[in-house]
Length: 151
Image (cartoon, rainbow, N blue to C red; front, side, top):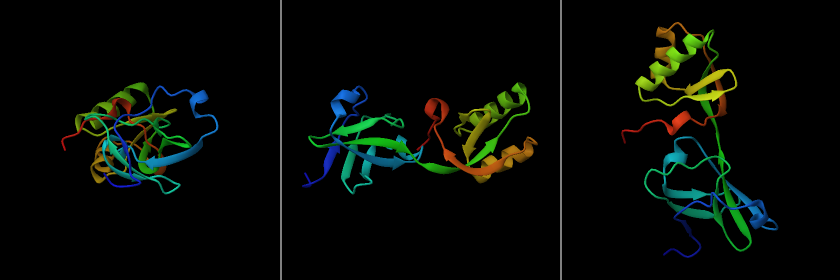
C-alpha cells in the first residue's frame, strides 16, 4: 500500500448531508468516459490522490460521494466536454437521431430540448448524412443508460 493514497472500493451513494456537515468538501472532475473507468488513479482539486478500485461495471454519477474521511470527503463532478448538440425539429427526427447514434454504440445525453453526442468525426459524418443541423459546444455530458463499450 502506498502511504497517503486513499483506495476507494465502493462509492458512498447513501451518505446523507448530515454525515458531511463540518467536513471539507473536495472534488474530482471527470468526463463521462472517465466516470466509467472504475480502476485508476485520480487527483482531487485539493491535490489528494485516490485509487479507484470500484466493482466492474460501476459508473460514477455526478454529485456522487466517492469517499468520506475523518475531516474531508470527495464528490464526483462532471467535466465540461466537447459535444455536438442537436435540437431536433420534430419528435420523429429526435427518435431517428437517437436510434442512429445508439446503433453505432455511441452515447446520447438529453439537455432540455437538445440531444448531445460526443464531438467525434463519426458523429459529425452521421449527422451530416442525416441532414441534421448541429453545433459544436461544451457541456456536461451525462449519457442516457451509460452507453455500451467494446473495450
